[in-house]
Image (cartoon, rainbow, N blue to C red; front, side, top):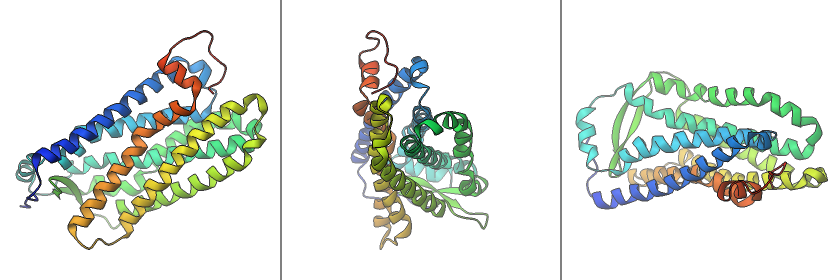
Length: 301
């Protein structure tokens, strides 16, 4: 039976978990507040395909946060649970592999973000041509984003996993039963695609913004600014992800440090999007914090 790592202060590790819970709860508050407004004023905001995709992204973030707060981070940062888990699950089990649903949702979130960026680039390149088309393909985009990660994760769900020590706690590790692409390799591919799409679409959006119709320019500028800010975080986070999976740490401690750091960095992508949207969109901010203040505008600013 594997033994838990000694030398980790239970109080300090639980404090780390508590800090993560606080910012996750803050993110959930903004996610739910923004989703409530977008749902309540669907007639105003549903005309923007970008906001429809953002709603899917927000729902995925909420699920990932709940999984982290309710299981993943508890296992990672509650040392007293480690000996119990090692005794209860001394052998690999397929049920442990279900915890990789969090990684699956992260991949789906990356695909949704890529389509959000493509939407921004299309909106400034051909605002008249693509508006109707984008509304029609949204369901297909969502289905594609939800199903495609199964290409790289299906082997994990069909393989057995085992709990292994991770810092003061523990984490699942898969014993691959099939000769197929690993989750880490698939993660590098998804991260590379996300970075390329974010950079290319950001450049297109910034260069072609002047082509936006004047009567719709404020709306496009605020949504594009939100997408550009998010793309900066995505590029940084996924660059770290690629480095972590491609580098060869000199020690187990270094590997665990980078593993924890990449997890923390992805937390930014879970918590920051609604905050960015509220900071850069006046109409959304007014609807969330002020409520109905007269007739709603025809578009968010």
